[in-house]
Image (cartoon, rainbow, N blue to C red):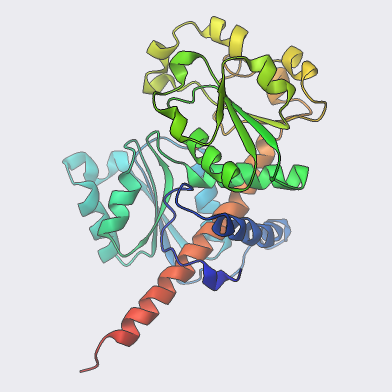
Length: 323
Ligand code: CP
């Protein structure tokens, strides 16, 4: 599959992507990973393009990673701090988008607390829109960097057993991982207390269990989710110590799992709540490698959506009658 096979100007989620499209992003990321090892960590692929980071929710990893990725592709990057923007004066999401478009930006990377926000946004602008996390819905680049890391470490995705443990109910990372991993042939198991598995979860291609030791026994990798106290996590599971006892990833639990099980976490970590420090910083952990791989994956996504948008614009301009 060549890059012309990527036709989407936006990346909104993994549910709609084909296996081939996901594989193309991963293959493109592999070629970009080398750029970060150079003395001058830059290629001219997006020279002249402007990328705007528009984050309506806090972020460390995703926002900085997109900024680093865009700069390594030689794009100009603008970070909009929503707290000091005209959103605070009541400007709507769509008006914010159309104004950024009028400022001739090319790509908006958007995080929003509402599920579906990125999709609505993309329908109203000609810019490329990259979803950096929308409510509980999807966080596609996080799942792509998780999958990239798995593939790099274990050599394949097909046939792997991946357990996702924790606050499934509130997790866009879980949803994107389930779509992405299952399309590539992995078997996904989610493990959480009953109140953290949302109603209607049967539509997802994943097995559900409430027994962590059982889930870990067969897992090649465990992706540990943060308890999202800011999204009702407190009411869903008020007893943090009880949660840690039953669902926390500890050295004792990892000792009973497969010897080389990979321990992943999208961050930010709640140490002592969903994972112990010994495991987070231990030899099975690839948590910081996930962060590093996020740069290559986001370079690939920015590059592919920008190319697709350019091609669409070129075709539209050709069709336009000349005066
Ligand atoms: N994994 C992730 O989305 O982290 P941030 O919230 O820091 O961006």
